[in-house]
Amino acid sequence: MGYKLGGSQESFNEVIKFLSAELGLDLKPNYTENPIQNYVMHTLADTTKINELGFEAKHSLEDGIKRII
Image (cartoon, rainbow, N blue to C red; front, side, top):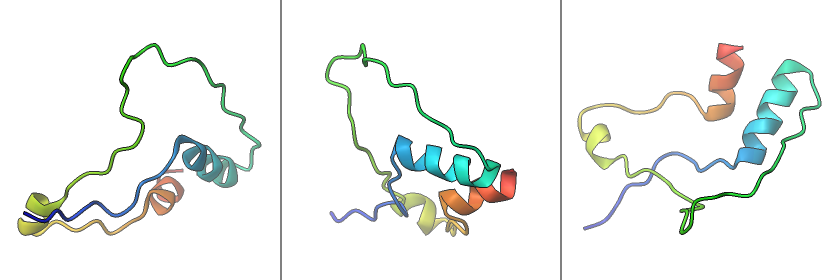
């Protein structure tokens, strides 16, 4: 069975970059040690079933942040 993956995979750093740009700030993330062992660092949703129901994302994460702010 093939998988249809979601639109894009964004890092925490990219989200900070999008927020900084839209807010006109120079946000700096504060990194801490992750206490969860075996943490899954990279994920991407399989959107096959929701797409079969007719849903398709109309906005990227960056555009969504702009629209909300």
